[in-house]
Amino acid sequence: MLRYFTAGESHGETLVAFLSGMPARLEIDQAFVDRELWRRQQGFGRGGRMKIERDSAHIVSGVRHGKTIGSPIAILIANKDWKNWQEILPVEAGDPEKHKRVASPRPGHADLAGALKYNFPEARYVLERASARESTSRVALGAIAKLFLRRLGIEVLSHVIAVGKAALANAEVPWEKLQELHAKSEVLLNCADAQAEERMKAEVDQALRTGDSVGGVFEVVAHGVPPGLGTYAQWDERLDGMLAQAVMSLQAVKAVEIGTGVGSALSFGSTVHDEIGYGAGQANGAFTGFTRASNHAGGVEGGVSNGEDILVRGYLKPISTLRRPLGSVDFATREPVKAAYERSDVCVVPAAGVAGEAMVALTLARCALEKFGGDSLEETLRNYEGYRQQLKRF
Ligand SMILES: Cc1cc2nc3c(=O)[nH]c(=O)nc-3n(C[C@H](O)[C@H](O)[C@H](O)COP(=O)(O)O)c2cc1C
Image (cartoon, rainbow, N blue to C red; front, side, top):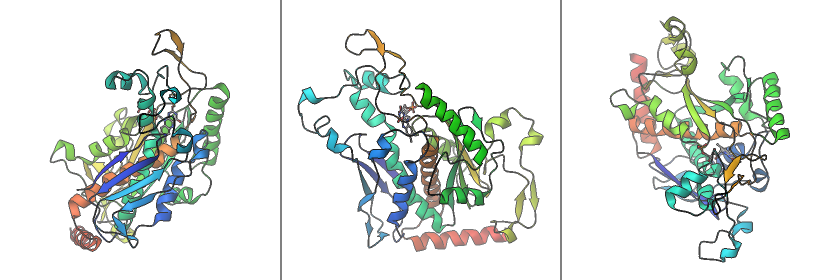
C-alpha cells in the first residue's frame, strides 16, 4: 500500500517527505521533481517568501543509481530562510528573548484553534506547521507518483478556472491545450484563455492595491486513467471520496467538485448524465470501444473511474493574511487589536492547482497499486497490461 507522511515547519531547517510502497525499479528524474517544486512557487500574486526559496528535492533514501529500490523514499527540502530563523526557532531551548511571537491570532488561520488545542500562549508553533509551506513536501511526493503513473500512460495536470469573480467562460479545455500551458516557462495565472487570464490578473491587482486577498478555483485533470480504479463496494474505497479528501486536505481549499458536480445539482438529469455509445473508442486510443457524449461526471461513476478524464476542482477561500489586517484580540491582554501580519501571498490559485495535481496523482497511484500490485515496476506493468487486454476483449 502506498503511504506518505510529511514533516517540517515553515521556518525550520528542512521539510521532510516520506513515501512507502512504491515498486522497485522506477526511474526517478530529479530534474522533473524540481520542476514540479518550481511550478508550485509560481503565479501572479505570490509574496516575498517565493523570492527567497528556490526549492530542490534532496532524496536521501529509497532511490539508488537513479531508480527506486522498493525501500521507503525520504526526501529533504531545505528552507533557505532557516539561516534567519535559527536563533528564533531553535530545536534546543535557545534564548527566549529571540522568540518571535504571533501575538494576535489571524482570522482564517489555525492560529486560535491551534493555540487552544495545544495549549500554547501564542500562535508561533501553530503557524509554523499549519502553513502551506507543507504542501511543498506533497508536491515532491506527488512528482514521484506522477513518474509512476506516466509508466501506466497516466498524466496529471491542472489549470485555473476562476480567480475571484473572473472565471473562464468555457472550462472544457482540450488536453493538448493543458499540455501547452504546462510547457510554459512563465506562469501568470495558469489559465488556458489569455483574455480570462487578464481579467483574473485584474482581480489580483485589485487585491494587491487594496491590501486584500483573493481566492478562486483550480481544476486538476488526470488523462489516460483506465476504468476500474476505486470501488463502490465499501464507502471509504470510493474514488470520488478519496479524491475529495485528498484535495480538501490542502490548505485554503474549502470545497471540492468532481466533474461539473455543483452545476449538476442545479440542473435536470437529461442535461447532466453522459450518454453512452459504442464504436470508435479503441481506435482513438481508448481502453474500450465505449464512448461518451460528454464528461460531466468527471470520469467517476459509482466511486469507480470510468475511463474518461478525471476532473477534480478545488475551491480556495481568499488568503487569510491581509496586509490590511482584520480585527483580533491580543493573546496576552485580550484587548482588541489588528491581527498579526506576516509576509504573505495575495493569490495562490495556480500554486494550489500544482499541489492539487500532487494529491490527485498520489491518490491514483495508490488505487492503481492496489488494483495491479507489484513489487517491481515490471510486475506492475505486466499486471496492468493483462488488465488492458481484458478490457479490450470485453
Ligand atoms: C500554495 C499555497 C500557499 C499559501 N500561502 C499563503 C500565504 O502566503 N498566506 C496565507 O495567509 N495563507 C496562505 N495559504 C493558505 C493558508 O495556508 C490556509 O488558509 C491556512 O493554513 C488555514 O487553513 P485552512 O484555510 O485550510 O482552514 C496558502 C495556501 C496554499 C495552498
